[in-house]
Length: 230
Image (tube, rainbow, N blue to C red; front, side):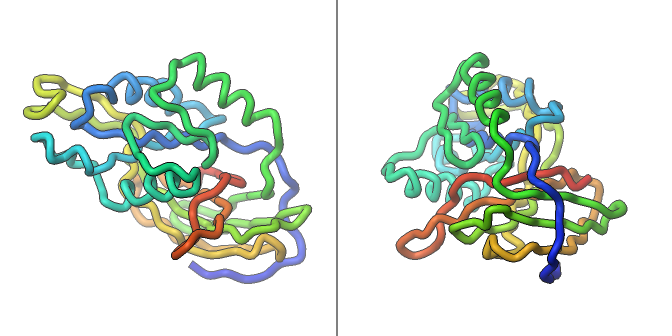
């Protein structure tokens, strides 16, 4: 990944709304939320991502999709919201709106509300399969730094649960996140172009997110723009 300054770039528009679901195969309350995420997973105006956390693994079933990094991301959201608790299922819409086991109507209302305003960052993607140019521009300039992230995910998965709270169930999942990497920091003032090389066929998206100051490290803030890479 390389980074260089530019003086021109795309104009702001309304890109896809990012919906993150923190879930676990060891959580009996999670299957309805997993089904709800699957309903919006193929929408062009939404980037729906399922992040499996590992803190319910002790209940008897180790979630094969869970990663400590996803638990850490959920904890960082909690710190940003000045909350001491994390839970599943939880949806985070555009990096700032938290929904606890929402109904379909509640989620649709939140997505529609986010679509009413343009993105804070103009983001465009070009290039051929495997090699992409990502252009970023903010007008007016951002007041906080931002982080550019590349997310990979598996579009579909089916798992038979043998133990734990969901024992005996066969569960279907959509857009299961397999990797989430911060690839560049951006000051939000200088128009910028990044070059990204994406290997393999697994879908990838780019997410530009505000980096809110924290005590020891920046915390995730509002999502400023997002786009599909492949």
